[in-house]
Image (cartoon, rainbow, N blue to C red; front, side):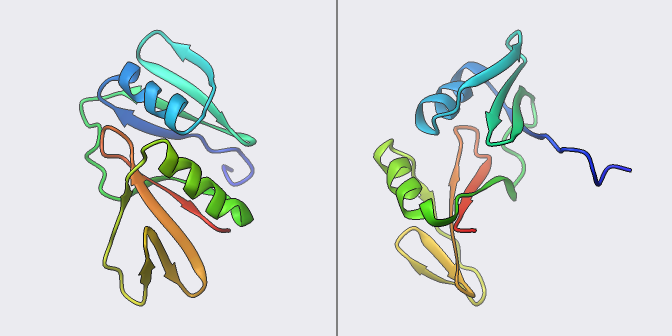
Length: 125
């Protein structure tokens, strides 16, 4: 029933104005739509995601959104660094870390957080 429908990621934030500065200026997204100050929609490739005001913002400790950037991984990583994005470092089983990049079975991943502490990442797939 849902397997042939597009999914939309929704990310809780405390302050949509502050969060939109991060998503637009640091990550480079263009606002697609908004519902007042409560919900802002962004296009990401062929999909969309929403940020929305919530008292539960930043309480998820797992990855909320991932971008598969393929061979552009190093370029995207460098671009994010140049905009002041700080990367997270985790001790994960069977994973080595080279700088900000975690490597497991040939897959490279870098995690970072938005201003509310939502965990985001890029992956070289």
